[in-house]
Image (tube, rainbow, N blue to C red; front, side, top):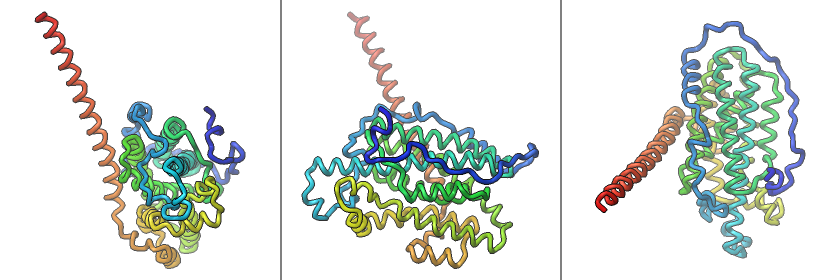
Length: 371
């Protein structure tokens, strides 16, 4: 079924065209590069995988509870609207929330694919071009996987959120070669990682857990790439140039914080926009969720050298300043370990099934021989 038939609301023009700016840069130095970045490039090649084979698409998903979302996680919980909803209505609301959330993941992954391709084009160093090429493939795989999950398992999509679209547009329109790194690798990817991780660690549904764990294994490399490249480059910038990028980060963080309210879902259930925004702002669960979303961004921003007074104050005002001391390397290592552990568990279970099948065949053969 065409995607346009599955959108829960009008998604507008089927194509979004963002005017390209900036230069395409070639490098004629083919035998030089940063060892850390080339090692990451090798890892990017070694860790390529096939979403059709690695993920168990035969796992059943209840479209009316695809993530095991608790009642308290929905912003209508405890309101007058919630009291009037039947169990069927609540299932429909869960479906819409999951569709909205994974649709933003899908649109973000397409944005990441385009930004990674833009980095290949515009970054001056060949070692960074090499790694960005592997990331472009990673992001294509992620978009494929999220798209398949939405089409086959939920049967509904939502258009791209206005704030996410705005940040993507600002990132892609900027002619400076480092801005796709900053907008995508640090802000959008950092926030996505936190969102993926919160769902991965709380859902009791095996298929979305697999998808998120495997995608996060890739994303851990992408954030490491952005940190490495920008940390080196930002050491060379003037104070004025650093302030420009800090302003971009502040604006981007406000956009991303406001992105994850899911107001569009409530509007689809007939709730006026102003009322839907109020419910989303009052939700204790969503408030905690939005705060934790910055657990990957703040330490990364600090690590790459964007830590001026104005930026620090913005994080104080958002209540996330303390996250700057988080151990980002530890979080990324855990992301990789969780995916590897999930693989080990799946392979062990499959091996047990094969052993059982062989045992059954042997026993059946022995029984027929006795007869």
